[in-house]
Length: 110
Image (cartoon, rainbow, N blue to C red; front, side, top):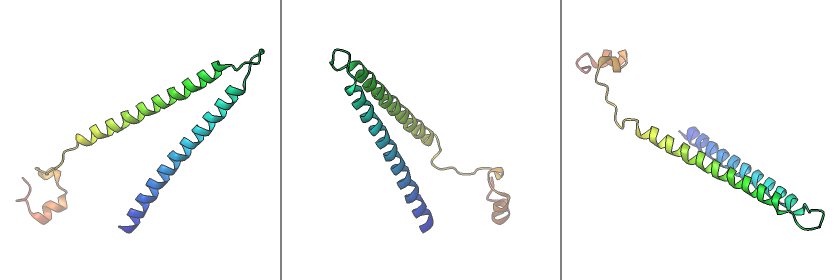
């Protein structure tokens, strides 16, 4: 039991670590691209904000799509788990393993 608990904690910790690492990489790449977009100037010497708008819009679209996929997945899993019956009682001899029928006798199988 202790090994399964440690394995569960290790699995959960590694999942959160990888999610955090992915978020950090996305944030660093976004910051770098925004800095490059702000450093880009036109021939007149003024800042060109068109690149910054495109970069910001693409990252916002990425965030919205990721959030919608995450919410969709959570809702699908919850709906699937709610479809599982809470208590399943075998009612036929076919539902029980043959060894159970042999130990319990045919009177237990309906």
